[in-house]
Image (cartoon, rainbow, N blue to C red; front, side):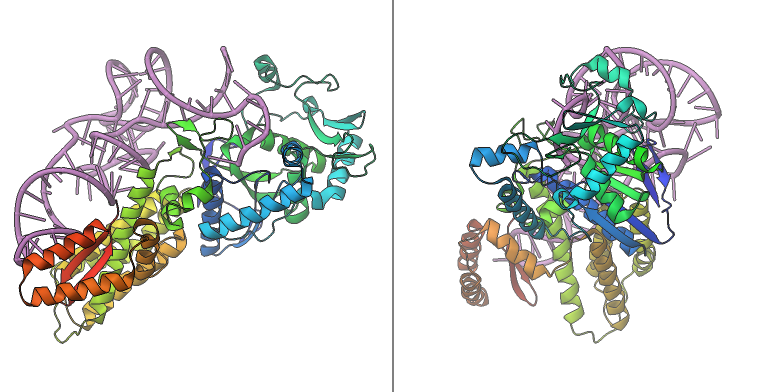
Length: 484
RNA sequence: GGCGGCGUACCCAAGUGGCUAAGGGAGAGGUCUGCAAAACCUUUAUGCAGCGGUUCGAAUCCGCUCGCCGCCUCCA
């Protein structure tokens, strides 16, 4: 497997520290507000990586944290007039709800910063002892100049950053780039007892403490959004490696941003869409498909139109699955092979290899999706050739199995076509009931038997206007939700 | 200003040295159909922002130019 490593700036062969085992840590969210689609991308991308590594036979230990104490949470608590831990608790619950709706699995461990205060204090003390950190007036800062490799992840050096001069002014720091490991708390703020008085952890130290505790000094993959590269992950490396004297994470993996009108989606620009809002308009599978149809490191432009295209693609997939079911259910009295059977069979033989090949190459989900649709077309073409008999059924069943396997890797295409159709109904034609459609269908069937085409077409048109499309086949008329 | 990335058809998007540049959407034409829909076929990039260079050979490597974006402050 190849994996792009931000640290080296290259795709590298993936070799875990312990053969057959992968330990990965992904920075989760700070729980002070609703999650937007950008958070969903990160969650979905790393969920897929984790699933795929497991599919590849690795024993995966996946840790994703919650930052449940920080300035933003404290500010939000003040604004809303509620205790800080009620804020964090509320948004943790909301996060779980969003992830469940999105179809993102839970991590093996989901630790919280406030559950690791003793570990955080321990590391901070260790860093002071080793001369990497200093205490001033109840604050403890990491001294960036003491760590020779500082900047190795984000590819910048301390002097350049100082020239940029957008760092906060803080008289107490020896160097403006120094960052807080521990912050003295003000009156009324959440606080824990420490050797430096009442205080709370800085932002970066929690991830060092939690990854060290749950995964050890050196582990395999550390992930998060690209905006965490600096300063968060840079600082994590500095404090972790200074503390343990060992390499921290081996592969640094970062997902790209979601943009709106070419601009990064962010809270400050106000151009964000919450997961909840989007799931009120689109099915979670469409959201997942949309996000996986672009490589995880590329920026991806968000729009309703893109989601609609995702729906159309998914619909094409399920329409083919339905066709498979119909074909298998048919009576196969004669043996007849379609003329392009060989080509089809050959494609089936290479299919999983091609999908895993794409995923092995830095999780190229977009290419894997492309392979799936190649198979879809080949399958439709094969069925157009009107094959029949046990051998044809076996071949189609094989194709169905392969599609299912590929879908399970990507965590898409994993339900029944009827369920997909029903899900679409909720969004596209919520006022139409299945009973209504079926009664209209029966009415139309009578008209068709009488060859009253005008009446039949009127009913078709009526249903079409309500968002339902009819398909007349030999076995009868079926219907599906129109995507618009 | 420093660092990094991107620019592939009408739109989205894969492809990072070598068969006819995946796949999806949209458009046009066709097969099928009572008519449709779905499906399939044909069609839309002799060219991958532009200009040079390296190479037997480049969308892919190097240089320059233009355009867009990100990070350098909290941010998935």
